[in-house]
Image (spheres, rainbow, N blue to C red):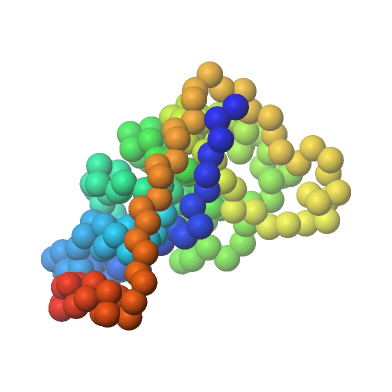
Length: 187
């Protein structure tokens, strides 16, 4: 059995993309910000692309997948476009969120009992990419009482190993200040 080490800190960079989109252009650069997050100890990068691209854009996801060296987690509603993006990018983890395109923000989780069949098919499809699947769910008494709440998924694919986290040990205040001074003055 493959042992997978889960990251302790995965930074969601959607708000960085929101700021960039509000300013126009590419300031701040989401790829550079993701690399800085990794440099300063993040063990993963998380994005949540939406169909209207008000945060991370699908093109950003592709570029990040080619650049990020830690775990890459993509959250989202499993529309056909989203699933095709996952099949192209092949992230380490996919987090399924029940927020259809007309939803402003995620405010509830999946009812996994009601959507069990649909989610099972989606999970099977995602697992073929080698990604781990996580489900944003709302706990209910029915779910907690159910003995077999997880749907067994058979797959011939091998999960993508999680990259070793980058470790930066800062032992003195001066070392921390020196690194902070190297950050770009204008993000």
